[in-house]
Amino acid sequence: MKDISQLIYDDTFKLCLRFTNKVYTKLPGDVGYPFIYIGEQFDQSGLTKDKLSSVGTLQQTIHIYGLADDRKGTTDLLRNIRLAARFMKDSQYSANQVNTDMIEEKPNQTETLIHGILTMEFSYYQDERGN
Image (cartoon, rainbow, N blue to C red; front, side):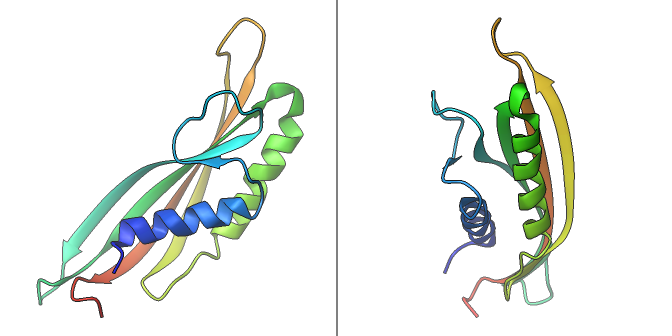
């Protein structure tokens, strides 16, 4: 049985693959833009009465990087993922909220990047007995 954090991570990765094949588990080397990497997770869980199951919320971040010259392509990718993420659901979790941030970054003298950050929040239930 997968831990709930791994289940949500894997499903998030698969969701992003629906929109591009440039999806990574860490910041990649020189792969071209735009690309996505599945970032941080933050889990706030609480025990239930039987101590072998937990309920909680988990935040998952998705980072989308693109060139400022192709801002529309980057924001379209961000929008498509944001809309699809609202419908993420499993027998153990469901999406509650998706927040979006966009910042401009200048990693060197020649290029300016758009960095989109999606923070998705999920409610979940995990039975540690595998039920």
